[in-house]
Image (tube, rainbow, N blue to C red; front, side, top):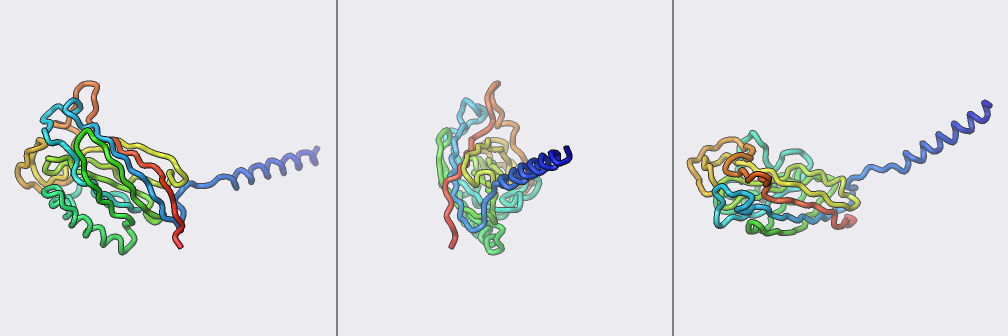
Length: 227
């Protein structure tokens, strides 16, 4: 009986070892450049956002970074970064690119993303590339013609997409706190307040509707060995 017990125990041990050997952690591997595709579909219309809907509604240039530390692109509860005001006022991305190029030197930022904006109720697609050192992505785009409101997705972990797949996120809306305006077109006074969530008036929505301005989908495209 003891002999059969030892044989059974050995079989169980072998099965357990095999199971552990087969288990792998899905993550971006070192030594590769990974390319991902982003698709953004707008749901910003007069029907979904009827309060003070602007006739020239649209999204400003799409800005983003691949990174490792959380909240590097912006931080709710803190002041807007120095690059934000020229971006909101003139759609300029020069300061944005200069600001984050310094982080590239210390490997805190991988890819710096700048893509064209688009009209409300439309959609757009683009690609970005990163490595295992910067396995997160954050994206934002201003609500035009608002003086300082924007929508974004933050700290999205790309590791689960390392071997393929697709994930989708509804954007969140924010007030950069640079001006005091309370509608899409009102600038108001310069305030220099902290960045805050902007999920109240005039962004509220009809009964049964949604106040999410866009859906962002990220999918694995390809990887290439770095030699």
